[in-house]
Length: 218
Image (tube, rainbow, N blue to C red; front, side, top):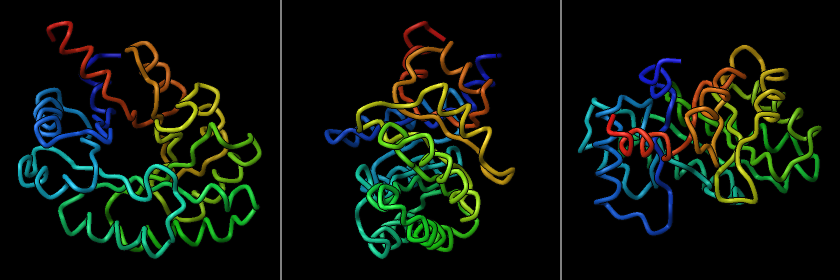
């Protein structure tokens, strides 16, 4: 795959607790330069980042991050504020405890609430695959499909593991045609990035791809 085409699928990401505005500004500059799909940044920087990049780059942020156990009402308020501050895309973390209890009705209702808040803005649903069984992942493919969300996403990158090829294969087999796939967490090489896309991912959450390009002088 052409590297310029691959980069169009990257959400250039910086979500570390220590992230400063100067670091956020730098990834915004890099994202614009390389033509990534978006920058994915903490909610506290959304307003400043959107004012900085304007329409040159989509700004994505995270809701209920990284543990997912805030109330649905809290997540809705977080999302509303982020959108008012200029966010173009929202990546929300589900309540994983509800999945473990089999309360897929509650998980689905929460996602529907967030999608109602997002309206025509993109909503991605992080299910944290490393904490789920294959059956739970399949059930979440169903729930995300029925909820009206735009993407199912593998991971926060803050738990015990990130994206795997097997999980993306599983998603591709079980999500509906209205749901796209985002692989995130631990994507460390151009070869792996291309493999995820070949398997059915549409977005890649990573900071390393752009770093690799910068290091190679591209």
